Image (cartoon, rainbow, N blue to C red; front, side):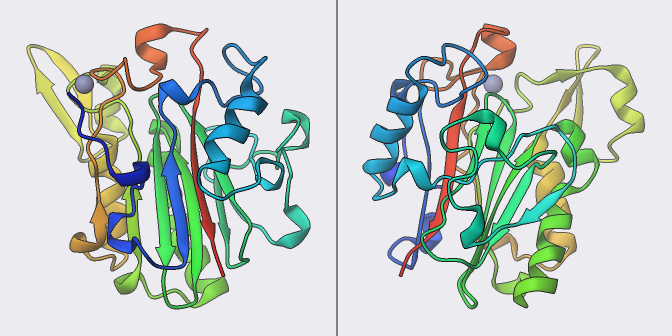
Length: 248
Ligand SMILES: [Zn+2]
């Protein structure tokens, strides 16, 4: 039996503070307007987000491309991609903001989502970190942007990891040895990648404290009943929603 977090909140260290964060489960339904069975996606979003006190029409979504661009968003971006995929912020895999009541969204089915919370400013970020974006150092780009724009102190940053395919199941090609200097493990002649370790290293390298990184440690492939997994289910699989929002 999977041990779930209270309200599926990956930022358990920040519970009770001025931030809402969560990831959806398979039982909440497909959240994507472009992948999987999309006909009920808006209803699914509405129902999941209303339980968190978030209006689904306010969601800020990115057209994720497995790149390293992190976009700073504000009130004018409210609702971009909330109702149609076409209106999403293009070529973006990370969102940051210090605007309150502006919910940021990332969609995943095996990729790692990384939640960032600066309790001082306050400010937040949400990152889509598959292997390409992780190799490109997207989480480091996000922390640096938060330092530039919001004067974020990495030593006080609180980080949460969403569910993703873990190194128990994430077999990768041999040439990944040339892409990653850590996070790889070899078992019975095959190579496995640990996305969380790669991202953790980038974060601590910038001064984020290990004790401030919360990892509920869920594998989408192992726990496929609870989570969508692209590797396990193939192209037709849906997407889970990761969401974070600053509150008043
Ligand atoms: Zn696994």
